[in-house]
Amino acid sequence: MVSSTRRPAASREAAATPSPGLLPWLADPLAQALATQRAHALLVHGPQGVGQFHFALGLAQAWLCETPAERRDRGLACGHCAACHLVDERSHPDLRVVVPELLRAEAGLEAEEAGSDDDGRKRKPSREIKVDQIRAALDFAELTAGRAAHKVLLLYPAEAINAVAANALLKTLEEPGALRFVLASGAAQQLLPTLRSRCQAIALPMPAREAALAWLQAQGVSDAEVLLDAAGGQPQAALALQSAGIDAAACRLFPQRVAQRDAAALSGWPLPLLVDALARLCHDRALLGLGLRPRFFPHGELRAADPQAMARQAEALRRHARHAEHPFSAALAVEALLIAAAD
Image (tube, rainbow, N blue to C red):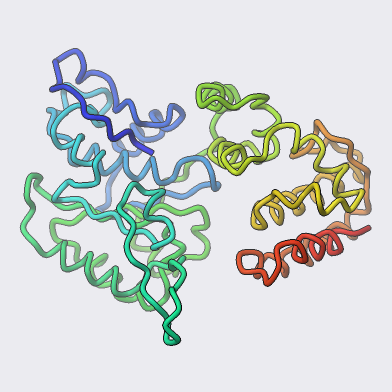
């Protein structure tokens, strides 16, 4: 997340460097996107865990930055002017960040009361971007810009926009006026084709391994290589593993514990992460069955398996994944997942 620390006023020397909150592997693709932008709406897409939200926020910050463009490195935000500070604080009057209720804290926004369901029970935060959020954002867009020449609407993750909300967004995407859009997605194929067709697509590549490892080590991740491999080369996903209490030792032992059906040892894994890890283990065992090197767990003890059997296991895991967030019993869910991953 972009830092919210207050910064001193910019000097001419400071304005030459990009925002210090930008993930290091994003600076070059962000500068290229700014140089090649030709549309009012950009769709930033790429693998999960490589920084789509940071990239989208970097675009918004560059569009709203008040330091003259000729004094900024490749058009990137200076990170020091008043406008950049307001973006860091999510309080810029010309920026609206729209995310599902569940992701507000992750996006640096204040949490909102989720309310109650029809039975009076506290409702769980939504994972969708709903039509009311889109309508409120479009109402915001109609207001006169406060500091900049245009307003910016950032939506993340774009695949969370439900069908009704997407349809409400389409007309404004066609006739945006002084509004710029940036949609960030880890699954752009799930967006309505009518949404995708109205946006200029910006593909984010996976970061170089060296850059990802250096960043993880700077975040205090021990044995960063093991976690980065387990996360499929996605540095933010690797950091999420550590934040969830899953360290390199747990990743090394994961294939062995699955083979032993050791549900107790795996009980500390959050169920969505466990489902992902089991699916990746299926992938690795299939690779070994084909005589290839495993991708996700090369540091563990793996057994080769029939690729077709692993494909069936992966399908069973996908079915379990639909309920991984809301199990009746976490312990029973772990046992069920291990049964689904049986040989």
